[in-house]
Amino acid sequence: MRISAAHAEGGIDEARGAAEAVLDSLYAFDAGPVLFKPTLTGGPQTFRTTRDGALSYFVGHDRKFPGDSGFALKGWTGVQIENAAIHIEGDTALTMGNVLITDASGAVTTVDKTWGFSRDAQGDLRIVLHHSSLPFAVE
Image (cartoon, rainbow, N blue to C red):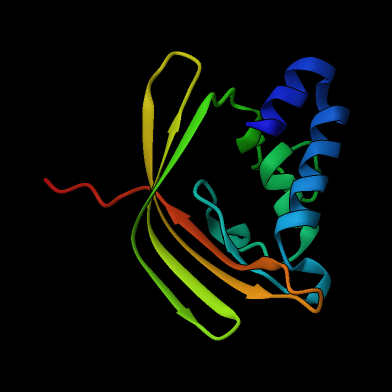
């Protein structure tokens, strides 16, 4: 929501700065590849193991990732995390469950997610695994 608000207030440059701050404070890209599979990606660019790939997914506007429209720019107004389970062992934690995101009209989209966290050298938790996808539709 921070990235979307920055975009509404100051355009793509503000959104990019907010997204970079999120990536740098929450993800472990400075330690190596992050296992990042965003919700709305496919084909040869499904997996984003670099900071540039993740940044493009969040804010778009990168010719190297032409399919990205900026997931974080879609005007999300709310987020709720419902964990099915959390596993903690040593300096590593894994979570699995749903993220419910609300758009400006009040519609809620449910996304399946798995996140992995690891403590960095300063003791801060950083995301090392981020997998999200739309739920399988049962017919």
